[in-house]
Length: 486
Image (tube, rainbow, N blue to C red; front, side):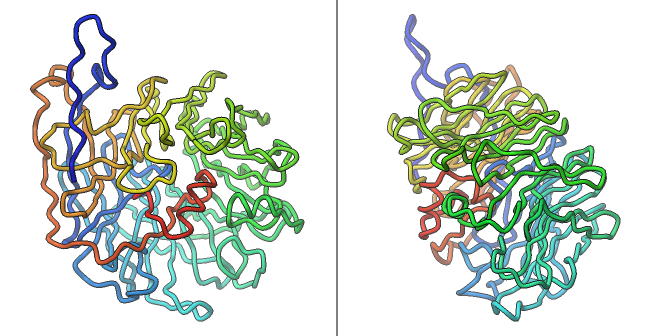
């Protein structure tokens, strides 16, 4: 693969090219466990904390026992283990007894990690392997279990108190199930007990986020009324849905912008919730911010669809919105009542913003509007400026092509998906150079070469974890077998 070359310096008196005055980055490649690929969460998931600890998962050399159908990542057919990485050291977090693979979903400010692990059991209904949510705390893996005899649980987030939230199936069959064939329920796990958080009136709910105050945000069915529009736009919810905030034992309905489909994307430490809602008439979807009991339509400029993916503690919201005609979508920043179109790298291309830090730095992805590889490029926006290709901000001899920037912490460190000349990929960590190193002093090669001697076993891809947050055009493309954003 050929990495984009740095652009030439601007001539005196001309407009500097994108990235001319931006911070440059060192590239640290995270090794695998001998297998071809490393993996990381996408679309707003927090897997890098402000201490520089990264939580992700990577392939081993062992073939997936469920190959060729139902491979753990749906992408290659090697087992994968969750890991933590800090200061050049990688720690294999292991799997539950009997299981083959594990992954991560979140890392807290103090280093607690949530995720999932296979447990060696087979679902008698589907014949596939089952997962349990897990918590890694002080070097130990804790099996979170399931609710009421259910066969599967997934984690979504964990806070510094070790409270984990997510979804669990129970043993009640449910024709409207969000996930599988049984009721899907939101849970909070705390001190060894998994608690069903209830619903807003319908049969199913799922918890998406928990903050440091212990507030929980998620999505629930409101009743048993069908919502064809919700099923069309999400692919998962069949009934009328609402957003909730749970605290002090109570689930609060956050309201709607008029339509029958309202879902949650993120929650900050001030208790502010962002998500999407269809408008009355079901012909448009807007981003919302809920704060102190008030639901606010964040607005849109030109198109009919928008979706937030992340909110920081300053209430800066990032995600995507469509342009007039709804065929092109751009990374978008909603801040202080303003809607900022962050653009895309190509005039006819698309982009979305995954994450924003407290400094207002936004990272994401840009490519063609089907998000097909190899058009994808990792991008950054500084304080509302148009997105810049991160590939022009790393040393030209790095030997890696950055295709998706998934997370930026408050130190300005970035997790990106790096693709290597042999066709393999893995997370890379981009570390800002010191102020005096933005010129020649930052032209170092990649810190660790990609170690894998293998190549991917196939090109089958799975939909990303935050599939429901994607623009409909991308979601439909991925559902039909196009490459994922990893």
